[in-house]
Image (cartoon, rainbow, N blue to C red; front, top):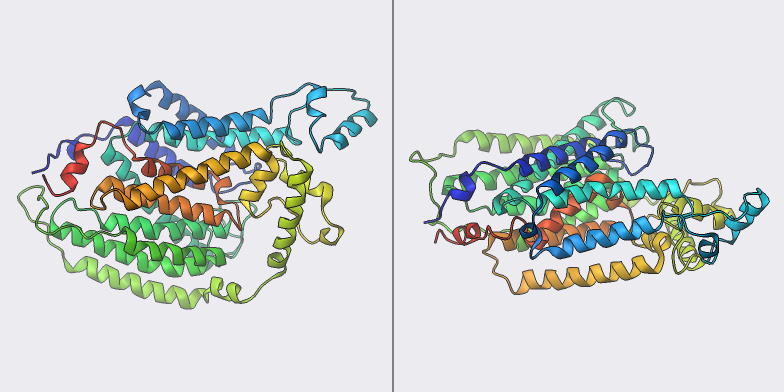
Length: 470
């Protein structure tokens, strides 16, 4: 019989602090623009949370998952290196700086110290944005294993709330107060986000999360059935919410999320569950009625929304045609500033230097709309090498957890979920830039914690209990 000691132990302060922080990030971190007013609160809080997490951080917390901290350290070091002022002889020697040096000469500034980034202020903003995911990782590494798994319920709850807010947005005024950001996709269901593609990606990632939620073997058989019913009901309502968003990329990622369900879901073994307390938990008709109500709401939503993402999927617009031009010009930028890049946060300004005449006046290009490419342009060869290392490490860990580790282990199930979520974020970054926003940064951090095994290293007895009550 399994011991309930870990599951019944009071939740730690680190867990509640992380739960609060994730809620704050979802409320204030849905935009990538540096002028979002909510960042005035979110970024200082992120730094304070990091400081609090370091105060209780111990060596045993990172044992076995040191690669997460090493990765964050490398990212911080690379970002910081782009905002530290360098002697004139150094920064002027890098490709693409001749124009800046000439402007300094014409302005009578002489030889002054400048950082690698062509836009130092944006570079500092990019550096400050890293504290939010760092806070999640520092706190997440201190959680017990069951607490790390409870983060799943928090992400599902916040994701569903974002979807429901999106539904209210499309029902209400396109310029109404339910939209949280000044620059957003008015008229679309963006929820807590400023961009419909990011909102739809969050909803798409809920499908693999719900598969793991429904696989939870804890409690009575009736409790397991209740979780499965709840997961199915939420899944039914998610589909029309994604259609309401009007995101074609979200629709494609939803298909990936749905395809991952058979690989992730594991039906708990009957007869091995321990009842918590003497009274049997009974399934009542209310959840069934609620499920049917959710289904009815979903159908009404489809009719009401007119399935905007499918309509947009069938109709290409000028932005789609221009995206290939963005990418072509971005490749030229990569070689112009090779090997050190144009600098952290400088893509929009660097793009304007060589923007084709035919593109002038059509769009304001603030992103490459391919985050892999934009990182290469702004951070140069060091970032390319770091991305290659990350991709190699990801595939190595993913192959291990999918081929060598038992699927009955709850930790393995969460690690597989983490691999699916990271893969979805990586794919979404090909035509977009989801990991530029604090919400997705923190979701990626949680997924990485699960991929790395989550929880404190010493708390492994829970898994043995989950694998059959032994």
